[in-house]
Image (cartoon, rainbow, N blue to C red; front, side, top):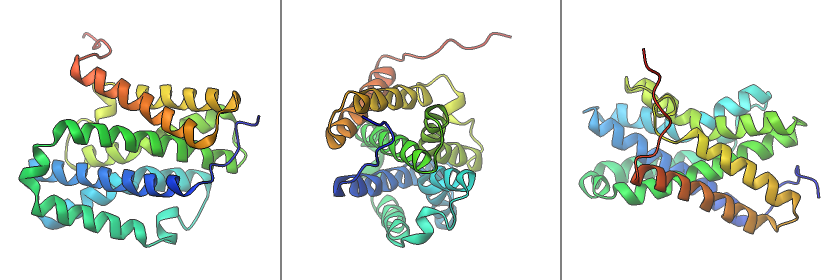
Amino acid sequence: MSITKKLEFPVKHYLDLAGTFVFAISGVRLAAEKKMDVFGAVVIAIATAIGGGTIRDLLLGSTPVAWMQNTVYLHVIIAAVTLGILFDRFIFELKNTLLIFDSIGLGVFTIAGMQKAFEFGLSTEYAIILGITTATAGGILRDVLANEVPVILRKEIYATACLAGALAFLSFQYLGLAEIFNTILTILIIVIIRTVAVKFNISFPKIKA
């Protein structure tokens, strides 16, 4: 079975929107930690939620970029910012829950990035790179705008989880697993890796000067 087959089922779209929402919430949380105003929270949320997809589409020459072709993404981000501001105390107490949803977002965007790369005829290697870019670039933009060292450059297991998920997705698809189950298993793998790494403080060793 070809590993370039496009994912076609409604759940994917809703998962994509859910990933956008959760990433936007993570942007709002960081903006709150940095004592930013509402405008700052909106900017950080937008960068986090659609930054990765924007960079992916620009690299592929796919314009207008995906979120500019469907206003629902902006609506989801606005809803996330509104809820993040109104229920900031409650959201901050959901750290572990948000970690899980953030990991789900990583999985969804990794798969979406790979599949769009395949649609443009790229090799498997570059598809994996674009999948990881789609999933992590928004977080990089968020951290840079907030004057933080990007999480992908710190000791936390982040891009590595996306790489593991990407390889798992391609392996399952090669074996002929149905797309929806493949996606669910891939996301589950990323969630488990991220959750276990954070819970048990598992990381790569730091470079010593």
